[in-house]
Structures are given as C-alpha cells and as structure tokens.
Image (cartoon, rainbow, N blue to C red; front, side, top):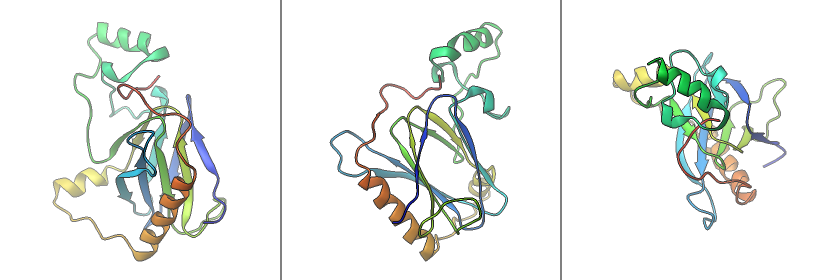
Length: 187
C-alpha cells in the first residue's frame, strides 16, 4: 500500500466523512496486547450522499441520539448530572446497526474510489486510530434496510481488495499506542 496518512482521533475531535457509492468503512480492534493482528468488528457499505460522523465531542452528537449516564466520564460528568437531576438523561443505551462505539486503540479503514482533495492509495482513502473512545454514526438507511429485510449487497471485488490492503496497512502499524480499559464512554 502506498502513502495514506494515519489520522489520530483524540479528545475534542469530530470528523464527517462524505461517502460515494461503493465506499466502505471497516472497524478493526485488537482483543489484547498479545494479538499479532486486529480483528474485524464490522464493515459498513455506503451510497452516494451518505455521511459518517466520527466524534469524541458530546456537543456534535445529533439531537436524535442520547447518551446514557453510564456512557460519559471526565469533563462531561457535571453536564450529565444536570440532565439526570432534571429527568432528561437517556434511560436506555441507544443501539443500532448504524451505531459503533469505537474504543481507544481501535482503527478505522475508509475505502472507495479516489476523489479530489483526499489522499488515497489503491482504494484506501483513510486509516485512523482512536486515541480516545469515539461515537461513530452511519446513515439511517442501515436501520431501514434491516427493518425492511433488504439484503446487504455483496462488496465489489475492488472494495474487498482495498479493505484487505487497509487491513494489512493497519496490521503493519503494530499495536496501537493506547488501548481502552473499562466501559466505553465520552469525556
């Protein structure tokens, strides 16, 4: 794989990835510091006009998504206490096929056709490592497809090849510099 920079997602970080037909995002995770390569947690495939939100900022989470009190820590705790005291805190942990709770140390590989202003190499558009826990939200279509029984389209051969290259690139980086401990949470 050629040059695709490794992006680090830390505290106070939000990024939107605009997608095109055939783009895919792969979530990779080391189960322990003794693993020689990360495992694939999930893969999303996208259509034109869809967008992915990656954030470690509560302020950038869409209004339809609410954090449960157990999902915040650090500087967000006072805000959650205020919401809890007012009876406005989320009562359930929001789950769905378009929700990933990426842990510190996890990696994301974004693949697709080359585009202006985005460095890419052989279909790999980006390789990212989380330095803190991130909330990753995909398009609502992922929910609708499951509810309506729409089968997932098979990945194109070019997409599979790019995902393999991205996996290999992520593996060659070695173990992440940080690894999550305890429960997932923002803050």
